[in-house]
Image 1 (cartoon, helix red, strand yellow):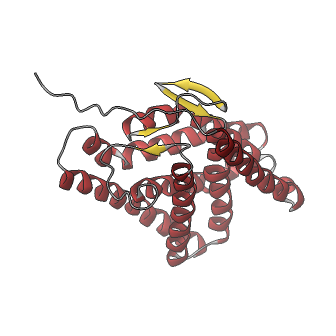
Image 2: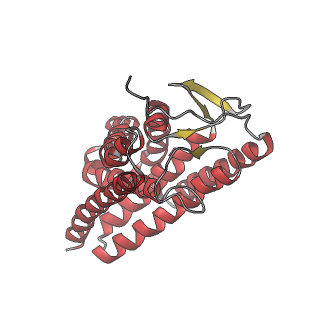
Length: 254
């Protein structure tokens, strides 16, 4: 018999107060970005691009989150008063699609605006580091509050969430930003509806490719050094993507 490498998923009820607080905080961030969009003239200059990107990234959470939760060994409490839907044996709370909207959508939109103005390679890397830190803090807060967490032999899992995962999330935001910059001038009028599906392609494609090494390592029963090597390889793939995007952004400035 070949031993199974499937790792059991932890299970306990979601803490109601912590979940509600996190949901409110997510809604406040989302509302603040939308208020800026309304008051800053962004709507007049770029139409409904931002709310459509928000909706598209929220939709991508529905399509993508349960799948990658399984491959990357991430769980949410199965019993949750804030459950939005359940798929692929994962219970997804409301703040997940809303969090996708402000993190991936909001970051990508703002980064695309910067790329349009032109930004140097060094600044792109600084922005990437900052985005990694924001994601690490947000995902770590969920873990500290027992709202969700990674399990199994996660590499680079220090005092919060695994560092490799924040590299992947940040890379997903940057890839969407580059796509918005490349396609934004062509997506006018009713063609902006394509923004409802663009994030699914960019984030799904990015996460599926860069997490391949660590996903294989986590789900194959490999020894710890190989699991850590898989995590390191995933971060290297992320940095390769940012290197390309930094070159794109610097050419925009030139």
